[in-house]
Length: 562
Image (cartoon, rainbow, N blue to C red):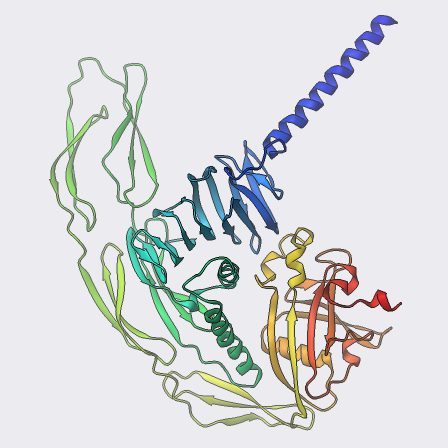
């Protein structure tokens, strides 16, 4: 009996040791025992899903995780996180993939493979990416890493030779420096610049951002007023590389972008072979060559050594390119090789093509080299449309607007506007926001992050005409349709009203058990459905997403009146 009891006790001790070892192992990987300090970077302010790969294990990382060398971080679309090192911050946007090479203060180094980062730092931070690397110190910069091109925009300080207000673009091995265009800033960058302006002085002020927001809002307002916004595009030619196609990007100051004129990827520009491992009589060797433009490598085996082997070389003439010299490579079947007859790089030889301006796009001259390198100059303004007269294509009725259309005589584009069948009786103001989600991202349904704007504003306050008898629901539905904002609703017989299920793909319960859409008019939250509230001139309507307290977090303190 005692032997059996002793055996059971030993088994329990072994099981406890295994469990304890497992807990310690998981805790080590997840950093439960790491101590935060100002000398080591820490990941915090996580919103949405951010994954970490550490020790071969991938898991959703938690707030306030101390980083280690070799950590791999990825953020899902719409997610964000902040690497903090003392007072310095590096904010990660959505779709970021990076490797922490060194997490220590003064030596912080990140290898960024994709996505957008916003760096506001006093201490030195090294950022490496596919086509280059930069050292950022006492500066504020935005890094964008995308296929085929990487850009570094400087907003404070100096990075290399790039001053504040300039953007450095790496394309096909070349570095281009130009003035930063505010129109290229997306919501993520705008939000980060506003935050940084609270602690440092940037070359882009909050007033500049207000003007940009007003310009974009005016485009929406014009659309709601029946005026079709006419795009005016600036162009940027992105040269192909050996890892990505080239293309021409067209950007309008309203934020709309598109790409065309894609060009094929370039072949790799290989360096000469180098012997990694010599062959022997018993074992094959290994040789390798690297691409001069990217990180690609190619391996080849070296045949086993034959006794009394005499080298017999085959010559291969490698012609010079625009950026690399040529040479003659002599290679023996055994793997031994050497080069002779080196020649200089030829330099770029450009042909040019004049692209005439169109109604909506700038004209320019594009200079292209056979190697894929390209640049543009002699930019001319878009000509603007040559509109004909308005023609009525649908007559208005007492209950429905009609439609007018006009055609451009140059390009055939068509523009439409509503033909009022009834006169508006006044104007109301409408705003749609979900900024409460920004404080509750940990509760958001995975995959929904991309539908949450960086500032939480889906539609800024706009002025909207309304007609006799129109309700809050009818104005909301009409504006969402015109502004291409997704909306879903259903009829609720119990309340004799429409119920808003989702706006901009954000639905009830997407951010917690008490989350969903509410509306207020002139700061009052009605206790009845939106299709029962008839509007008056000057009403201010705000649709807001509540996450907690059934509206308490957006100002509806209904429980206080119970």
